[in-house]
Structure formats: C-alpha cells, structure tokens
Image (cartoon, rainbow, N blue to C red; front, side):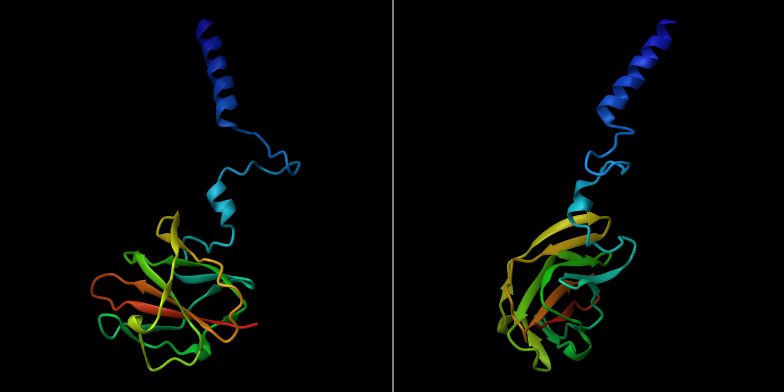
Amino acid sequence: MRNASRLALFSYLALCFCGCGEKSAGVPGSPRDTSPVISMISDAPDASKLGVFASTNDGLKELLVYGEQTGETSYRAPSTAGAPTVASVKAFYINMPNSNVMSSKVFVEPSRDLAPTFTEAASHSVPVSFESVKGNLYRVVLPDLGKRPGSLLLLKVSMPLGTPDRIYAINLGS
C-alpha cells in the first residue's frame, strides 16, 4: 500500500511540474505550445528540406539563384533575372550540412545590375546575427533595412572545404 501511495504522489508531482496534458489558456482545446523557439520563428522552413530560404513580406521564398566563388573574395555574379522580387526580407535560413554558417555575410547592392564578377571588397556587408533553429537549420537575422526598391540583397554562404562558396540573390522591389 505504501508503494502505491508513493507512485500516486510521484505521478501527481510529475504532472504538476512537467505540465503534461496542460492546455493553453489562449485558445480552448489547443495544445500547450512547448517550443517557444519554433513559435517565435514560425516562418522557418521544414528542417528536413535542404537549401537557402528568405523570410519575406510575401512569405518564405527558396533561393535558387546563386553565383560561385572564383577567387578568395570574388564570385561569378548571380543572374538576378531568376531571383525572386520582394518588398522586404526579415531573415535568411540556411540548411546546408557542413557549411560554415557563422561565416555567412549579407550584402546590399544599390542596383540589380551587377558586374559579371562580384567582389566582397567592393561592397559593404550589413551586421547580422545567427540563431540555431533545429539540426543544420540556421536563421540569419537581418537589421531593419527599410525600403530599398531596385536594390539587391546577396547572401554569401561559406561551403564545406573543397566546394566553392556561394552567393545567393534576392531582388528588393516595391
């Protein structure tokens, strides 16, 4: 009998401290949100999908247009014609296993007309911060860049050793 009382007490305490079965006070019948990180970045892509994405005013966009590294800090410029056009970008998401995400940089170009070769020295990067989302998925948080119609955002992703780094493009419009 004594063991049954201890088991009941342990079960009660586990329910109290773990919040198992607890519902959210906000919406009746909804499960309690147990992931504050994921809820804060609800625009994140599925962590199982590899690639580079932009969280924009028009939703999540996969970035498929990129140029590759040709020198230490120079790149074949990406074709901006195939890049998405959005009014603003809040963050980038990188899910590229073995890439060096913390070495990524974001550049703002005043014009979408890039020279055939882009060099880091000829441009200025904007300050960014990095957040781990899940597994290999990272969020690159941008400062508020304001409205910059006609300009171009470039995201440099440092690839694994032996693979040229990439620079992804997204157009900023109205």
